[in-house]
Length: 420
Image (cartoon, rainbow, N blue to C red; front, side, top):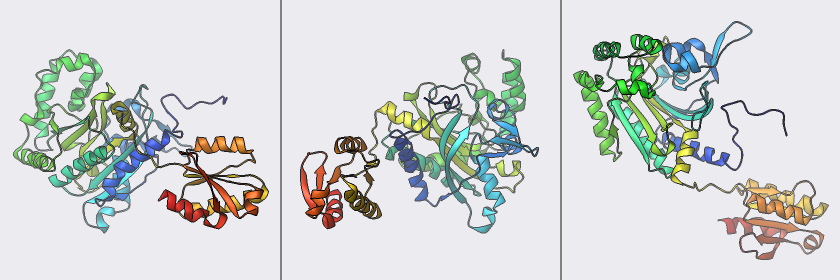
């Protein structure tokens, strides 16, 4: 037993469960790859100011949850708590908005870190797949991303999730709403921290999950009643495009994403089978983020879907993913000559795309066959000195138990034929 354990609030991905996570990542990424999104990977840590400016200094992420540290050289860095700011920073640094057609469409997959109270579905280290479309203001782009996320979830077999949709307005209409909301919040019985947050970014108070706060928000002014004509028209087109694609959604006038950079379209994917941590993903439009971090005006939209919570949602619905077999063929040599021959055959099978494994460590027949059973292989090849002297190996079907002799030089072709 090791004296070390995974840090509190983190987890290890271990076979066979890790195969689910890989399958979820692949399923989420597949529609993106087929829609013009290219893969991007950014460092696990960034300058603290990138998140302070972009995510928002008043957010819980920056004030309470970010892992920040100072390097030996005096740089202030932070483990990335989310992906959008990092992806936009990388795109700006590489001038991607100057070298090709807009929007720049990118997808990514990685680990993110927040110092939170650990509970099921909420970890200090978690995995997301995200997508960003940078440099275009178009309702069709917002709709595209929502549709692609819906497509990804349904390809996994999920059906009990809901899409919540709202508009947060823009720099023209949001200030008017902001002032009205602040007037309302000042009349409530709120603690000092919440009142201070209301003065900095009152929309963040709407996102407060505490029941004591939510009870007092009944009757709060709604942003939809303050939207300017341009924002109303934009939002209505997003709704029409999603509806035309056959994607169901629910209008949620109180939906506020927890990051400061969102404008106009905002959405969340929730699964009621996950209890309090019901959000499995979400995103929206962030037209001003580029300027916040020192770049040019680049209206953009994106989302991030939680791999961990998607796996929990699959379990809640009882969905069993069809995962490819880790091993299709397992080779059991009996003797040194058989080791050389069968190892060569395993190598040949792998080159031909057949998942194959080998009984390492010189175990006897009984122990090696136990390993073959545990591997989940459909077929086992067994060979000893007598078999090789006759130019054959024994091919055993692990489902039926049937065993047949097959020529050494024909075994690869025979297995390819049987496995299709």
